[in-house]
Image (cartoon, rainbow, N blue to C red; front, side, top):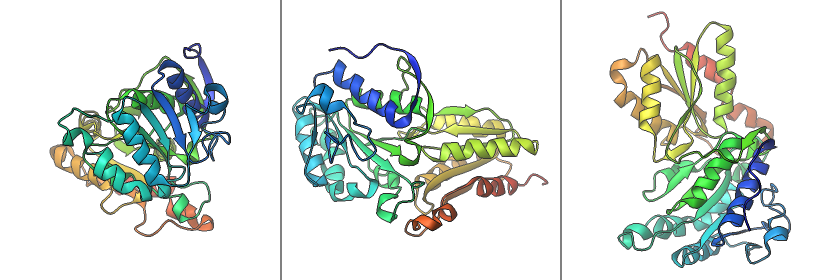
Length: 331
């Protein structure tokens, strides 16, 4: 069975992820998909809709509500030549599997001196914006980015979702694939012939006055803020990090050096975060080029807000504009 005919079409991010899974299943018989409700139901966000009907229960199937067991099973399968793609359903649901991920998924290659590498993908819907309670809206990417041995990816568009998931499934090593759930229903063009290399950031908007650095759900906020700032005459560049680790220092630092100012945007709490790591790297590597301190706009250092208050918690255009305005323009 071969993948569907390559073409460009408009689709949601959820549909793009579904297409990436379907094409990978069709192209490689060692790929299989499993997790909680991913079979007949098609997942709580319908990302796996129709895969069981098309490829059969041997290739896409449901599991018990046991995240540690899901990851442990995937480790054993990957050790034996399969390419499992597992879904954690919601970000915080992955915590029961954390020991398996940190102790075995991340370390197996090093433990065996590269003899046993684990070609597996852990799909995790993350972030807010859907009116969910705290354990449905976590942003836990820092835990995984801090763990050597894991690649961590987060797309911001349907095109990136398709291309990066195909690359993650083809990778010889484990990838934690963080999917911004509030963008599942966002639409955009998808060309299934386009590949996106893991470990490479992208400039989403050109600009010369200040650089906004974001990933996943925060890229759209950065682009909206850039458009607002342009109305005031500021030329704002936006960098989409895409891969949290390994981090693309070259692209990010080149962008910041070209503008001399930077703001990092992320939904996760700011303390000990991916955003603070990026902020530190930029300050260290671009110090001689900076016209102002590197700012960050993040979630607050509290548990995620209840649904009626999440708009106060999440970074928005106003907070980003305030950060831009603080960058010593009159000095």
